[in-house]
Length: 92
Image (cartoon, rainbow, N blue to C red; front, top):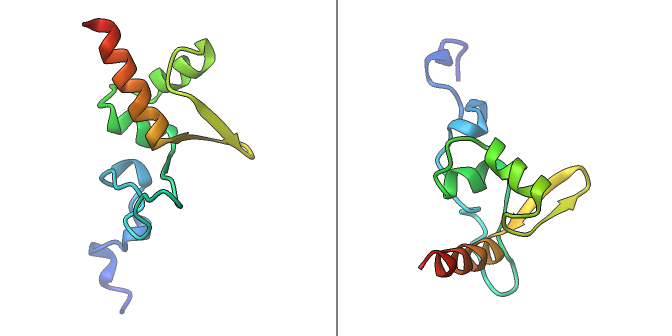
């Protein structure tokens, strides 16, 4: 590619927040390989107005269960879906 290709950024140049949510397309969720979400992906999945809602849920221990991987917070997709199902059952 030439240096004039600045009009079409590479996929790695697009900020993660602007990419559409795709739970690891190269490695689909299986029993052997669970899918883990970042707080930003969780907010996008649940159509929340801000990722701050996810952080508040974590501080108050009211949201889906998450865990730390080093300094990063991750959410298991299966646990998030189970939590959402439980929460919708409470509202009914």
